[in-house]
Image (cartoon, rainbow, N blue to C red):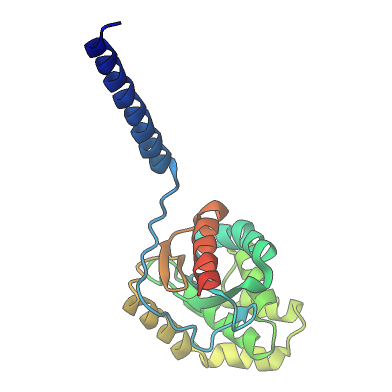
Length: 216
C-alpha cells in the first residue's frame, strides 16, 4: 500500500475511534439520571416532630397537608422505604402546609396532630390521618384520639380551643419563605424537591448528600 494511503487510513481510523469515544461518553452522560433539586439554603426544622437522630448526615424536611392525596401516597408508599433503607443516616421532619383554599379540613387536622404530639403520639396519629383522609371532620379527629388511647378530655380541649392554630400557620408561613407553593414539598439538606416523587428520586439525592458528608 502506498504511504499516503496508509496515512489516510490511519487518520480515518483515528477519527472513527475518537468519534466512538465521544458519542459513548455523551450518551452515557445523557442517560444518567438528573434530578432537579436545587439548594435553597438552610431550612429550619423548628421544633416539629421528627424521626431519626438529630445529627444524622441527611435531614429531610417535608411540608405537608393531611388532606392531600399526593402527600398520603408519599407517606404510605415511599417514606417507609426511605426509613427502612437509610435508618440512622436520615432524619425526617414533618412540618405543616395546609392548603385551606382547597382542603378545608387540613388546618384542623394539622392542629389535631399537634395535640397528639403533645401527648407523645404524633406519628401514630399522623399515620391514621393519612389512612383515613375521607373523614377529617372534627368529630372524626376526636375519635382517632380516643382510638389511640389519648387523654380524651385533654385532647378535645386542645383541639376545640385552637391551641395550635398559630403554630400550624407559622409552619405555613415558613414554607412560603422557602418557596413552597404546594404539598408535598421536601428539603433534603436544603435541596428542594417538589411533589410525591418515587423512592428512586429520593435515593439519588440522598446518596449524593451522603457522599458529600463522607468526603468532608
